Length: 313
Image: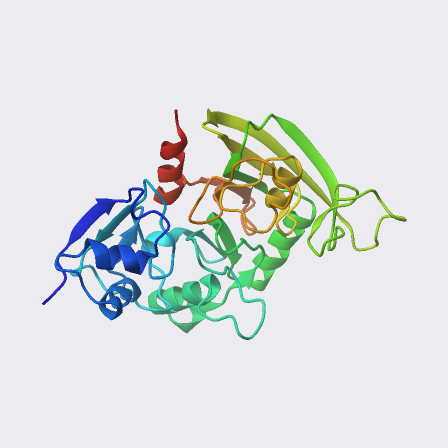
């Protein structure tokens, strides 16, 4: 018997369970575990408004889950055309979804954002339209605006703009505690003393000179809204180091919601979240071909908005 459509809001009884468990429990009559996982895999399940194919994702109180067996099947390696924010002969600006590696780090990484984007462009423009140059990266759970180059010349010009910090990048983040406005300027090193990346001299007192591989990292943090035990903040990057926002806010005593790495030593109550609550909301740069100023702005996705709403007094 086919599973009927349904939607529900997660209460304390279901909080912490996997998506497959919720799908199975919400179905009437209850479907099997294999049916629940298959519904997720085929893109028939939405979690906080977004299609979620990972049946093992944990849900939180206040989340919204819906099942529609008639929804279009998700095809692997396919990015929806709605993810294309801007396309021309030299660049592509795309809205990166959560849970997707932006670019491969090794040969084992498949089905990344750049793979899906190439597939979409090839389908729309043929083989000539599928060449892409990587000029930036976003973490797997980070959502929002990314730009790719479509020609070698565009890639070089964008990389140069990145080197001289001529790119406007602003992020929305949900962070623990009452975050104050601050300008953070540190030297990031690969091992702060416990195997994690961090700012030189923050985790422990400096031992010896600054390492040669240290990278200057500058973040401006501006609080936008005070929430219950958390804050909505805007972070403007003046450099683009790996995990820069996550590290800087954690070292300031305000780890991001959903953080599982840079949260050691946090003394407050951890607010549960389905992912790291970080969204690339504004991206501005000069077009590498025309020199025209481009500026794109993208609101946070539904799961971010749902978490924000749940934290408002």
